[in-house]
Image (cartoon, rainbow, N blue to C red; front, side, top):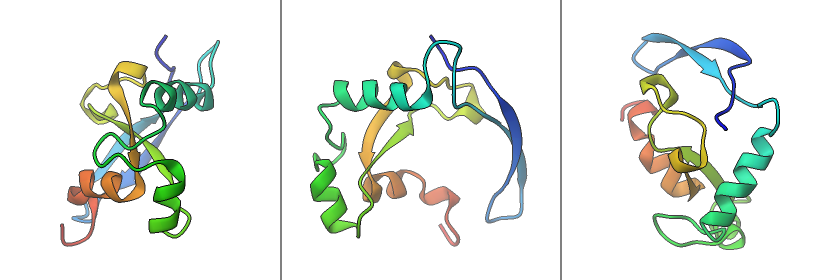
Length: 104
């Protein structure tokens, strides 16, 4: 079951462009935390790009471990479902979002 939008917020990109985005954190039956646990379980609790475990990622990235990434962004019609999410370590997640970083 896809998550339902609870609220909207405006995000400012480094180039000054503004975008209104749906904030999707819960459903009527499952919380965002439950979805993350499901996705991390199906990904064997490893980064899908480099293979690091939670502890390996925390050791390398000063306590920042595994994160959940939308393969198709919400802004492009992606949904918060297990099929559209992947487990990535902090470093790989940052690489996937270079376009959102200053000077990137």
